[in-house]
Every structure is written in structure tokens, then in C-alpha cells.
Image (cartoon, rainbow, N blue to C red; front, side, top):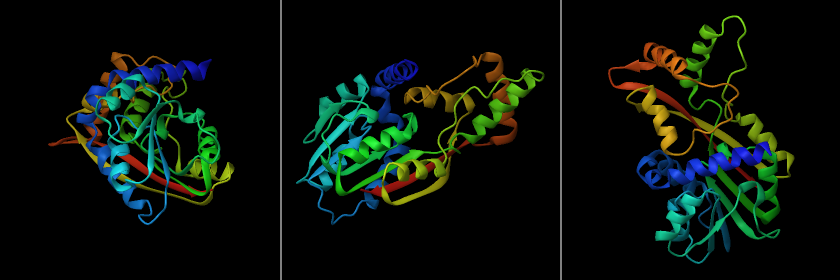
Amino acid sequence: MILKSIDQRIRRAFSDSALQYEALTSLHKEIGRELIHKIPANGSFLKILDVGMGTGWFTNRLKNIFPDSLVVGLDFADGMIETTRQYQEDFKVIQAHARALPFKEASFALIVSNLAYQWIGDHPLAFRRSYEVLEKDGIFSFTMFGHETFKELFEALENSIEKKFSKERPDFPVRRLAKCEHIEAALQSVGFLDVHVDFERIKVRFPDMMGLIQWTKNIGANNLEKNIYIGKDLLLRANDYYNEHFKDSFGITATFEVVWASGRK
């Protein structure tokens, strides 16, 4: 029931943000282009699955590069599905969750995903389902944001919480994203071979901390699990800390850790 509730909350967030998503995802597109370059161009992929397609930009790129392949785009947010269907061309659109891929075993030669798995809980379960629907020697290649993403924001929130709850400090209220070693272990645990996990960290500028938070809301990515209420007072404290430690004349900086991962069945 808890996972179902979280899934419904995330589904609503991404659905509500679908129309704004395209205008706010230049970073996602740059990473997507790099991901495509990592896919073997000479590979024979008769069937390709894109998990967490969003509004279908990346899926459409895949179809352009592999015009003879059957390309399927999958997402679980109503808004993303509706938006994609308005302009999608030659790929199929399926609404489903990454942890419950509605396909038979050995259905795809290639499964890709661009910046979706960070929002999906229970990575071993999700990766196992991808493993099952891959053909033998099929490739699973994806990107996701890793543990160091938004590290400045987490530090600012941590500092604010410590000041407010100096005597009985609760656990940190927002779940951090997965570490590289956990991603690698999850891939190996379900049977993937030739597992490769790497990362790079990039700095992105925002006008201020609230602009960063608003950006995460606009792309529907503000629904990580919380165990206490983060109110206005805490945000103001965090904003002051952020400005003091991570701001210059051009605005504030935010770290994004991009994880590149792949495996073979």
C-alpha cells in the first residue's frame, strides 16, 4: 500500500508537469544524446524498449537512428502518455510501470532509459523485470541521477534541521538517490553480465535555491519520500545557508551526478 501511494503521487506529479516538461529538459536531452552514442551503432536491435519515455523525445530519436526496429516507449504518467500520443510518429506507446513491464520474456534486444530510474523504488525488482524481458545477449543501457545530485541542497537542509531540532533531531526527511555501488550491485544481483557503472558530476546554475526547487517541481521530480514536514521556516534557513556557501554573482550552483550504467543478459 505504501509503494502504491508513492507511485500514485509521482504519477500525478509527472502528469501535471507534462506540458512544461519539454521546455525545462535541455539537460535531459544532452544526457540522452550521450546515451545514444554509447549504444552500439552496428547492433542488430529488432525490438527496442524505452523505459520512462516522458514526452517521447528520446524514443523518437531512437526510432530515427534505428528505423527498421520496432521501438516501444513506456511511461506510467497519464499526462506524459497523452502528450506523447499527440505527436509521436512511428513508435508504440505503452502505459505501465518499470517494475511491472507488461511484456513476455525475451521480448526486446535493447532496453534503454534516460533519467527515469532515480524515481523508481526497489531497483533490484525493476532491473530484474528488465532482465526478464531482454533476449539472450540483449543490452540494458541507461542513465539516472545518482546520490550526489542536489548535494548542496541536502547540505543546506541538513544544516537547517540541525539548528531547529538541536536536541532531538529527526532522521533526515528526504530520501537521497542511489549510490553507484548500489546500482552496480543491483544489476549484478539479477544476473546481468559485463556490468559497467560510471558517473560524472556537472554543475548547473539556477537563479536561487527556490528556483532550483521550483525546477524540480516543474519536471515532477519533487516526490521523494519524506518523514517530516519541510515548512517555510526550514526553507528560509536552508536558503540563507545555500546563499552563504554556494552562491556567486551569477546565481547558485547545483550538482547533478549522472550515472551511466549498462549490462548484458
